[in-house]
Amino acid sequence: MNFYVMTLFPEMVSEGLHTSIMGRAMDAGIIRLETVNIRDYTLDKHRHTDDYPYGGGAGMVMSPEPIKRCYDAIMEKRNSEKKPRVIYLTPWGKVFDQNMAKELAEEEDLIFLCGHYEGVDERVLNEIVTDPVSIGDYVLSGGELPAMVMIDAVSRMVPGVLSNEESGMTESFENSLLEYPQYTRPEVWMEQKVPEVLLSGNHQKIAEWREERSIDRTLQYRPELMDKAVLSKKGGKYYRLRQKEAVGQEKE
Ligand code: SAM
Image (tube, rainbow, N blue to C red; front, side, top):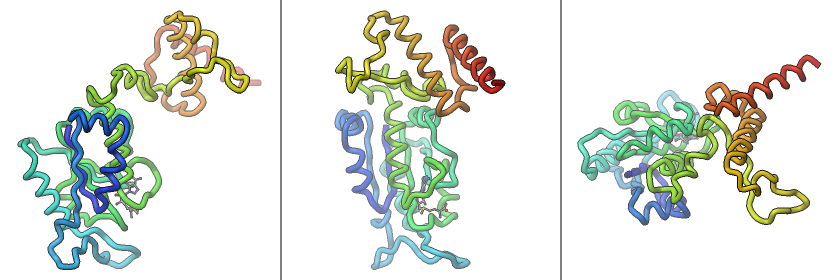
């Protein structure tokens, strides 16, 4: 899978992503990352990429022409006829989640446009962007960190990126549940003991325990996810029990 990132800070993205799982996947050629400096596509001698906003107001706006020229250069380099999805990172976009990560992982190429300053001239967005995406309801200084967040999450869904395919299937948000608690050695740490069932070697009991703890955690931190949760028969029974308990507590 090929990621192209249009940015004013290419090193931030390439250096930030070339580590750990992502670095390995790039070295193995499973994913390819190309950062493209928008400033290289300016036409004036001062290499300006921004200008004052029409209508007044604070801050600067990224100019359309260098971005369009940068996009055209990427399009020329690609060896696919298919029009790629172009993601503009922006606080007003659709909020990114695990389902979107999975959907985007099916693409051959993805192009990201990182904004800066007050944002980007609307006309170039109209020309090239297919998906405006936000990583959450807060405002960052630039689109680089959001692009890195998305590339990391999408890459994990690309076959071969995770060494153990299973781990992607048991993480938080799979089946709309948060992940159960994890433990490693030592068995006792600061007087806290690893739950007995995890030492039992009984895989069925371990799976049941993990599903129940996932339900508990989801109920505690993200109860709204429970509506879409896919539960086993036993898990469903446990969830109904928890719901009854909650109703009982409300009445008391
Ligand atoms: N004036 C813009 C607004 O109110 O929507 C905010 C601009 S922000 C300071 C600069 C750039 O950071 C944006 O163009 C966008 O690329 C990026 N950005 C900031 N917050 C983001 C978020 N939550 N998700 C995705 N991108 C974000």
